[in-house]
Length: 252
Image (cartoon, rainbow, N blue to C red; front, side):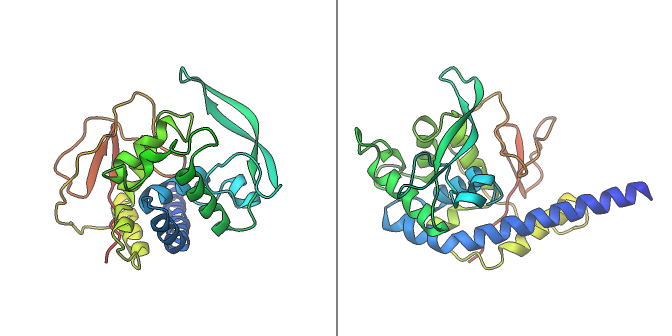
């Protein structure tokens, strides 16, 4: 009985997480696609940024300040001070307090992030040019360009690309619909719990510039690290840096 209760609680936890993730993607999809394309940026990369930086809108910064991209400074004189994790140039992690922008709305946060990526810094307007669709030939390259510019975490680009693969966010770049993403996530969770016997046709994987690293890449509450050698006979899974990911397609 104890095992059954634990299993039921775990299943409920996964379903709740799936609902949060689905709701977040659906809520942000339209404005991110519109604003990204207006600024010649990849919607998939911006969506992945919002997911990683805000933990699907559950972070304290996104809840209290509508700041979904971890942007520091002040916005129209408004800011909040919060503790944040940073990395030294040698990769050592430390925690410090920093001032972050406080936005009046989610849309303002998205627009400001796009503006920053398009206009760079005061000293270098092209600082984030590696993320532009006119410079990066793919979303993979655009995401990797942020590792050395946007964040102090050198694994940042890998984390973004892992999220893009997990939720098949490249579909946002081509204007595909995500109306049934909820059913896709639920189907994935059922399979993880061993309650689905449905097999999917094998999908081709694409080469990317995701680098091999020794530290875990995964943001909290999103993936679980898998141990042991990668398998090659499961057509619905993809191996990235020793992370076994369940692919979820956004259908047209």
